[in-house]
Structures are given as structure tokens and as C-alpha cells.
Image 1 (tube, rainbow, N blue to C red):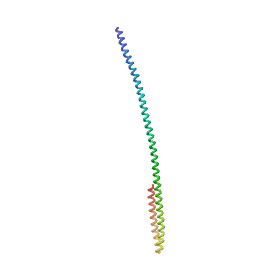
Image 2 (spheres, rainbow, N blue to C red):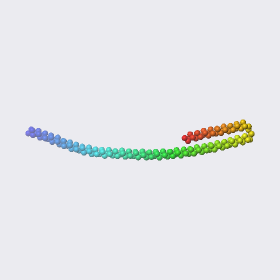
Image 3 (cartoon, helix red, strand yellow):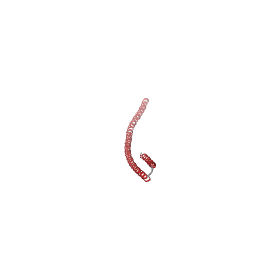
Image 4 (cartoon, rainbow, N blue to C red):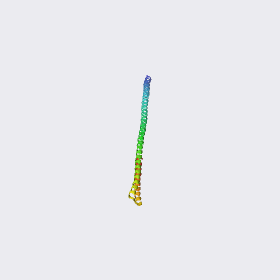
Length: 159
């Protein structure tokens, strides 16, 4: 009876351990299910984040493409403006030179006429005539030099 009591006691303890093991197995199964559910939820969350990241990446790519197009359009517009300004400046340059050349020719004709007129009216001596011609030539060179300086100045402004 002592042995039976002890066996009963050991049997009770074994039953308790078995019950505890069964409870632990149930808890383990519940934890596995919970982990599986959490893992699935986590996967869904990660997929959601990945979709958001991919969506943001696509949006950034579209914005970049739009910015590149805007840049190209703006660059083309500016190129056109520069081209128009250069064309206007070249036209002004040609007009100024045409006017200067015209005035130079006019001046040369007037100088030649004036030289002849003065020589005829005053009956200058040949030496005096040469002096007047030299002065007119000097004036002519001065006008050409001024014209050359103006041409260089306009060329630099157009560059």
C-alpha cells in the first residue's frame, strides 16, 4: 500500500507532466499558428512597402523624364532667342558698315572735288597742291582708321 500510494503519486505526477506537455504542445501549436499569421501579415506589409517603393520609383522616373523634356524645350527656346538676337545684330552690323562705307565714298568724292576746285580757283603751285592732297589723304587715313576701330568694336560686341 505504500508502494501503491507511491505508484499512484508517481502516476499522478506523470499525468500532471503529461497534461503540462499537452498544454505546452497546444501552446506551441498556437504560437506556430500565430507566427504563421504574423509572418503572413508581415509579408503583406512588406509587399505593401515594396509596392509603395516601386510606385515612388516610377513616379520619380516620370518626374525626371518630364524635367528632361522641360529642360530640352527651354534649351531649344533659348537657342532660338540667341539665334534671333545674333541675326538682328548681324543685320545691324551690315547696316552700320554700309552706312560707313557710303559716307566714306561720299567724303572721298567731296575731297577730290574740293581739291580740284581749290586748285582751280587759287592756281596753287604744285607744292601747295601736293600739301593739300597730303592733308586730305591724311584725313582719309584717319577716317579709315576710325572706321577700322569702329568695325573691331562692333565685331567684339557681336561675338
